[in-house]
Picture (tube, rainbow, N blue to C red):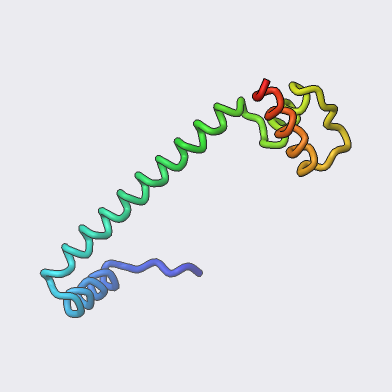
Length: 100
């Protein structure tokens, strides 16, 4: 059975908070809590926006799919290759193409 506080319990808790923290400090604590919640949501929104931009730039592909496309663009057949080996080969061929 879940605990659900009634009006009497809430009044008692508020009284205890006023006794422990004082009437002057409680509004400051509530203000700080509200600000921190706002900052948290702002940071969450920025992180989500950055992840969305990254996904849009990759056309919704995973990093491995992007690597496969890069390998095909430089003329490598990526089937059966390890990812690390493929990364090295693609980077080397892209550097060669960039130097020419």
